[in-house]
Image (cartoon, rainbow, N blue to C red; front, side, top):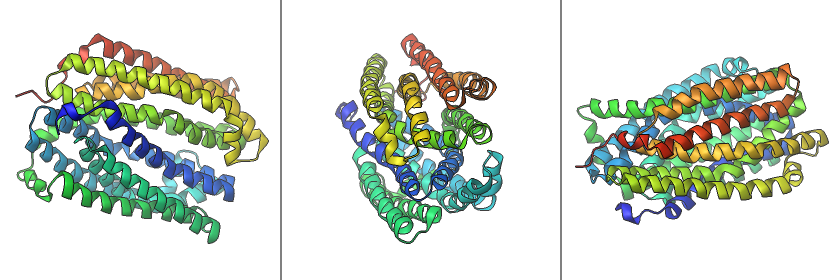
Length: 442
């Protein structure tokens, strides 16, 4: 795939649809359960906090694979790109099996550790024992999607995600609304859709993008490539890990100190705001591919300009989405619940959320751009400070000590995103990332 054929829009719009639909997988679960039982919906949200933090293990490999594959393709080293693809799929499969076993046997202790109690613990454990047991499929799915995307073929994984959503939605309605299976039905629907998605994506990958023979590159084991993957993947995954761990601690604060209405409002607001930042996720992912190709080809000045264009584009789109969200905040919350206390809490939080989204957009795009160049240590260092000093400590002080509840929680989250965003802008414009490339142009 020639890098001149790759454009931000051409790469981003399928990633946007795929990301939106992937998020919709979780949103459909919450929506269907919200019609069934508010606590069941919150239980799924709590369980998903646990799965999100463990999937960071998969990003050690997939983050590194995305960077190396795009840079190798930019440098016209196709065989090396294929070797990384085989390594990514294999390593994710092995780690996925280990994580699945942990969720099957230790789901209740994990959920209890983060503060789930009573009926929420029971329901979330029921959900996690099923969905968690199939996390190895999510690991393989993630690796295969990374390989396909970084060849510039972003439409393929988009179509697979469309199919997964159709299956998930249909089974959710059948199992929950018809057979009254509650969280068990939702868990089965989610897991089955992942089984189907993994099978289809594997067929497409090995027919249109790579050959099954790529696994021969793993003999002898390519230790140098594993070293390069760890060099990129561990700091990149650590940045995501620290963010998700901070969110897990914040969830524990919510479960232990805030009112039940605030917990429910948090769950619904988070599902609504997913639709605010999916454009930034798509633009960031597309930019990482583009910049990886450009850096691999030695076109670093062009990569710099692309990063600026991507950031400005994402900010403009986020501004429009935030405006729509604020104007329609009451009807949007009314989709999930008729509880006036939850609706009023959520409506105010959506106003505070405007500042958070501008910071989050900057982080999603510019951290992806930095990652595409191989510059992964700086974002991680910023995450260590900001996530814990501003997000976690700030949440506890404002929400609990000063009694601001969910409003204090959101102010702290916004402060974290904005401060890190300003640091990312400085890093990108400084050009210090230009000497971080792993792959050297031949």
